[in-house]
Image (cartoon, rainbow, N blue to C red; front, side):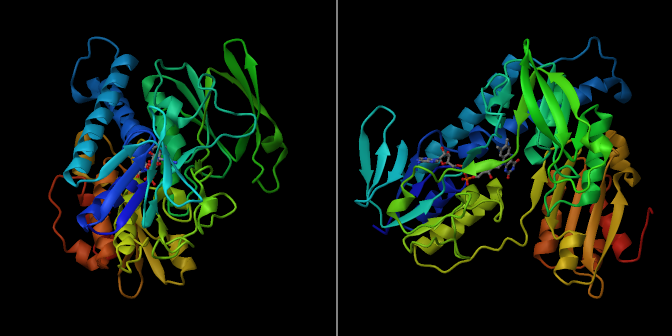
Length: 477
Ligand code: FAD
């Protein structure tokens, strides 16, 4: 038998690390306190995308007449069936993961793990009692949980976390979403399509204010959210919440990040809503896991410190996934990729993680997807770059499917034409970003992409269009 490796947490980071370590010949124990699949499968990517699938179908069915269909009655969601479908998808995936663990002879132990001064991990079993797990190498993949704000503590009824929102048994008439980041904007799309009146409050000057997200894409998103009657309050924050009858009375004031607010900015807005969904970030599951018995260090917020090999300050311990915090990428596919690196290193390799080409897929309406550098990031890196944009409305396929909003922006080096970033908003761009990722990863030039034949009529033609424009050979613009 190979090294005894324990993996704590079975999300997309932890379970992939367990599989990779087992494939490498290690004797692997995987410890998970809830269900395999972690946040991604149980409280994140998968359930939210099940709800988004229903949201998209509802939006499309409401436009049936545009497509030459006489709809007999108004469509409306059936939350009980939606939740049943969501739970079935999750359960099917969980079954698949359990089979995967069996196949790779991974010992899967259900229970809450805690490092001890004596050495072994003490696992509190759901049925009561403890089990000690011996280990030589440890991979920490304990992920995160939703974080609330003072005065907005989750209660599962009026003040909701994203976990609560994924289990709604009815559509609230009105919702205030605090935080216009990825999760907030995805829920705004879901809840508005289900029939709720939605207001989003974002403290920064734009939606999804991540450095990797192109500001022009978020402008398009804001416009399209307004078309869906989602109200967005930018540069604002919730200053007070009071219970009022069955609902909540919310006061919205100026954001503390707003420099030189005008009198109008400082004027509070008041509204009454059924519930408030708080999506302002996540906090690491590093408290209470016994890190004090190891050499592992964390930063001021509790995120685990690692080097480029994902090794912690304790040479026997590696860490991966969301528990590394926002300086790394808090995405399921980043966690899974890190898993391969950490598992290899725990078995003696010296791999390192490259974050330069990690795509980001955001399931708003329309979808948003990015890979590589934005113009601002490229300039900060000292690159002489140019950018070109092509609009989806110029594509036959976009017209055919009736989804013409959106654009593709390509960021490339001025002298060599090397593609440094691609920023997409529009129909199915979370699929199209795969081709853009390959182009950035393979250091392709705009000429390489322009000389690649894209099938017609497809949405992928947007990549050919924008590359042709960048190469100085525009066809439709
Ligand atoms: P997690 O998935 O959080 O898994 C950690 C696991 O560790 C959990 O199962 C937890 O129970 C377990 N654990 C913690 N402590 C212990 C302990 N002491 N003992 C035993 N087990 C323990 N990412 C995307 O890439 N695409 C998306 O579309 C997307 N959508 C999202 C939507 C929502 C609403 C949310 C909340 C997140 C979304 N994410 C998305 C982010 C994605 O879910 C995370 O990046 C991913 O789950 C991180 O994986 P992880 O393995 O690091 O941690």
